[in-house]
Image 1 (cartoon, rainbow, N blue to C red):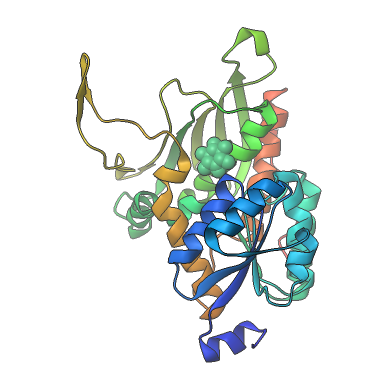
Image 2: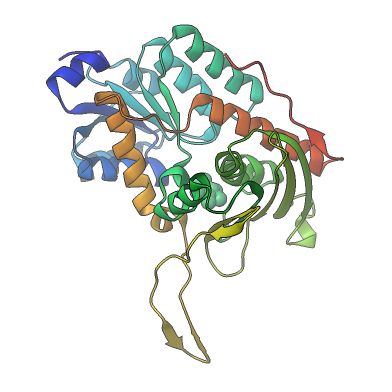
Length: 338
Ligand code: ISE
């Protein structure tokens, strides 16, 4: 089997993918790989042995002894990293060392210097190998808004507004909400405004006075390198379900994501549309399109998706947000782009 992207391109073979971490997100990737043409899950690993065995049996995939063995397995041509956030950077670095394309779930790293190492190591190797799982980039509703912005129809983009409301989840801390949830919205601000975040001013409020150190609702105002501004609202406990939206205000108009299609419900004393309860369902089409595009970028030189730089620069803004929550507005300092 040809081990290089060029070799695979010539022979149009099925890309053999290994998946590290098969909890909620990783399991969904394994499931989606069944539906994606030109790729198949060939090995999986998870530290939770019971979960590993169950996913392996359900999808008929071999298991690996540990994450390193999976990445080093010569049958594995490309890797999806969906393990706990703290493991992302090291596993991605190992993939780069072995020249294997990697789709790393967000965040690229938890600590900024780890993300910096990923950017620098990939750049030193001279080959683009890393894609970061900012799946909204593939969401049809988001893409429609981006196309309007890029068409010039609303003139010069001046202001981005993003909202991101979650059902309650276990283990949420101020840092986790910023680095695991708000990171999507920081990415969106960069993507829609086509600029880096240069300053973050964040405020937050706890939902529950008994856990006053958890800023469950975080609001950030951003200054962008283009001069545009943005406001992001991230709510870790919406009280109703899951919702994400974006709006871009331009010098000549405004464009907003459409509400997700859902039935009109009449029940009790209300008429309305049921809300989503989780991102795996709301963004289901986006996850499949993300995988298809990732496979296409490897086997057929298709356009690459969100890069290690996107992972790094977005994480830098998240860290500035955390510092700002603890103090005052923070400039975002980026490394020189390799
Ligand atoms: C989760 O990890 C995700 O990636 C979801 O897209 C996001 O909406 C949620 O807040 C995160 O916890």
